[in-house]
Length: 273
Image (cartoon, rainbow, N blue to C red; front, side, top):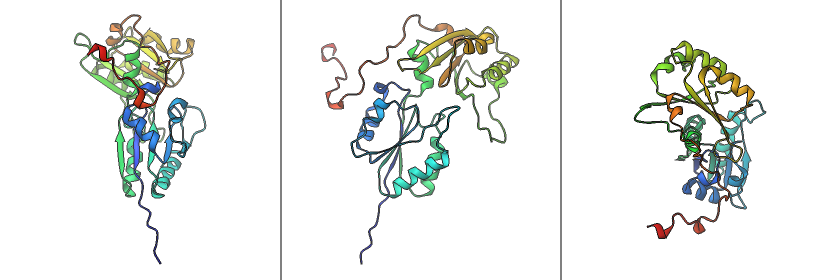
């Protein structure tokens, strides 16, 4: 009697970009259209997930601050189960899978179980958000260094690794992910670390989406302004002299046209060659 041998599928850890569906990479779109199973986070727009094939199994495993979410262990088990069933799985994450997205944790589990993994980078919101509002993260006259840092370390972490007082002097530009909840503490620590309280800051909510908005404020006024203007997660916070170099009235337009058949997309104007 012959036994059926199931060859495990491949898991593709894919970055979906910052939100605007047209910022999805061509490779990411191809994988979404052809995968057997799509496991996606909460921040992935419907315009992207609907690009999956009609026979694709779709699983929502989103995590949003202050809301019920699927535990990470359950997500790991789900991806592993699907791959062991021989299915090619796209694990779709907002931004880039290796920038504050737990991509490293998920890959570790898969590799320990002998599952092949391929990684597809995406545009992180830490770059897209300031870019859409004309804020350069580096500038020869203002910023030679950029630090990407989380404003929300793990609750069960034995020793915190983010030292805000040290960061106050060690980087020209700070780009803070998930920092809204702890903004008062962050600002206090940066000022105690020697950062000028009049340093310009930007807060950008829902970058690249139709409801995106941007707040420019001095460091010491930032917590109050965030509350006053009702900025919520997901938001990116940029702190540093670089904010003063913001290009006025040069906001990148959010796409009115969403994803199309990739074979019909005109990538450039031939008349401009």
